[in-house]
Image 1: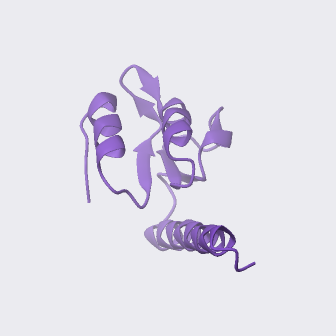
Image 2 (image 1 turned 30 degrees about the horizontal axis):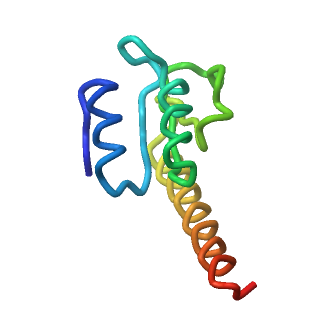
Length: 104
């Protein structure tokens, strides 16, 4: 697991490391989580991005992220949602490999 204390460090880690998923708060210093998601998706569009927020409703810009989780949701719901988004990502990656190998 990688952690970052600011947006710059998050982007550096995202670019340089193998990442399975990104989880970001929505309210960041100088940027929103959905703005960060848009930047990350331009670089690595297949990596799932989860936005976490104390807001009840999904924030503007969620089209760049794969999942929204409200901080008030119970942990079992978080785990289920994250498991689902990772499973979906793995299935899409496997389909891409199959198509790339001409096996579809």
